Image (cartoon, rainbow, N blue to C red; front, side):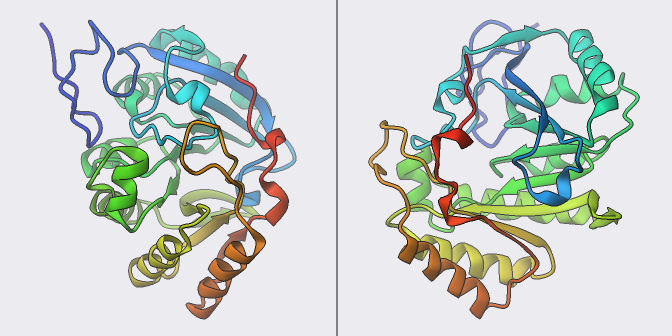
Length: 281
């Protein structure tokens, strides 16, 4: 019996048991890279042991400027059965502070099944581009502890231009509301063990978009942690072909300060370096 994939808001309707969906992946879990003791997420997500970062192959958004474009295009890495994935988590979680599932949305069904079999001992982070459905967020809340979500755009014209979707703003807003509904912020010492962090990557030439994103966060999620990022790194495949300038970033930080959005993290301006882009050999 075939099925039509509707895991993400694309609802591409592809039978991924037979061919690849918009995400450029089939039904089976595909992992491009596992990085142990990963220390490059927000400080509250990892102690001195670091997080177990699992980068999944493919993506349901596929932004043309993605710094991880090697994997967002799909077809990179190794296939894992549900049992193999469960074994990976069981074996590796013992020496890490958390499990960081990076761009996992298009494998939601398989991951929900896998975590039914896993005796989880550390928090699980759902590291997402924000293009999710409320239905999936409700399902994921059974095993996900922290939603680390992007809020990329407050302008659907930009979303269409760079990510090929004209409904990102409403989708991201609704999914973030659902995340906040299910997860209150809880800390054990300095580590977030449950909650929501809203990320925003500032794009060169588009500070107005960042102002609008911050306005949206202030209106709907004023108490939640935010994370402003300056690490935009040109990948040579997008019309966004330069790094962010210091003036652009300072303007966005000034707007955040004006809105009194002070609960969260500000990435150092010099973070736009190739060393921050994982090698997906």
